[in-house]
Amino acid sequence: MNEFFGTTMPKLGFGLMRLPRLADGKTIDIEQCEAMTDAFLDAGMRYFDTAYVYEGSEEAARRFLVERHPRESFYLADKVNASPWAAKSAEEAKRELAVSLERTGAGYFDFYLLHALSARNVDYYENYGIWEFAAKAKERGLVRHVGFSFHDRPDVLDEILTRHPEAEFVQLQLNYGDWESPSVCSRENYEVAVAHGKPVVVMEPVKGGLLANPPQQVQDILRAVNPDASIASWAVRFVASLDNVMVVLSGMSNVAQMEDNLSYMRDFRPLDAAEKDAVERASRTLAGIEQVPCTGCHYCTGGCPKGIDIPSVFSAYNRYLVYGDLAGAKRSYASAVAKGGKASDCVRCLQCEGACPQHIEIASWLKRAAAVLE
Image 1 (tube, rainbow, N blue to C red):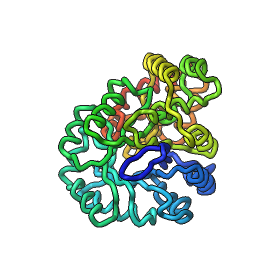
Image 2: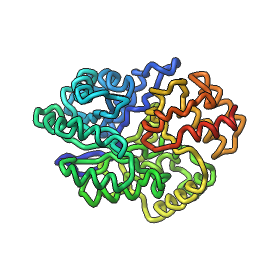
Image 3: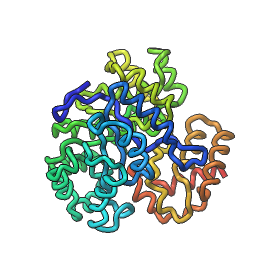
């Protein structure tokens, strides 16, 4: 437990971007979400995180959370996205708050974030007056705390926090796989937030699930220290052990993942010296293996003119790159193509690269994937 904003905040948060789906792959499994939510709250956890652009998430949260539990029993975080692919004008961006409140039925948001800030889109938030809009929403009682999520380099983060000291917290992508990454800059961004005295909400602690099943040599390092701990637990506990971390979001997609997370986060214990050393060695080992740094957020897919399911293509390709499983990678790729276009269909319009919070050179990676998997 840790103290922020005058409240005691349990360390584990429930990220609602990757909710379980029914067999059709589209419909959110409300029944399973209800079971996950009940277990989460029963364990003393409180923080739920959704966003205007998480398709179906806000409406689902109303059904499995807001309509079933007292409003004061949980914290709900939501986000406004002013990037061109989400809002075409200042009016559209500002309208998102009212829509999000209507979808969730929450009445107010405990935490409201300017979504996915980076050098590519920060001017939209400035020019549209979103900072001022959020401050007024706070004055009106529609939101209680204002911050932002961030995907870029530490110098950009420092500039934003210097310009906007009113930001009460910052949400960062932190995990041991990206800790020394030259593109994600997890450690450096965390240190900037600490220097500005801002509490940190962690996103992607398991790197879109990749750190729940990392390469075998990484797993061997961790299991040598504690053979009984789940592999995912190392990733979550690593970031939860950082001093300035307020809460760690885990995008749990089934009851089993919820049960695993609660098994070690209900009574959270920071990493000890031997465990920290193991994670550092695992991080160095992972950094030496080439793979596409995709977290499966799907921000890239909405405007693709060929309908390519880019994250699924990259997931299949990473199966080949990391595990050498060409047959399995091709099976996964076939499933990805069944949802949309082939990797070779890419016309290099590059809208996907403009939307990607990881700054991945998507077109180049699609070309490489096509060469191996088609």
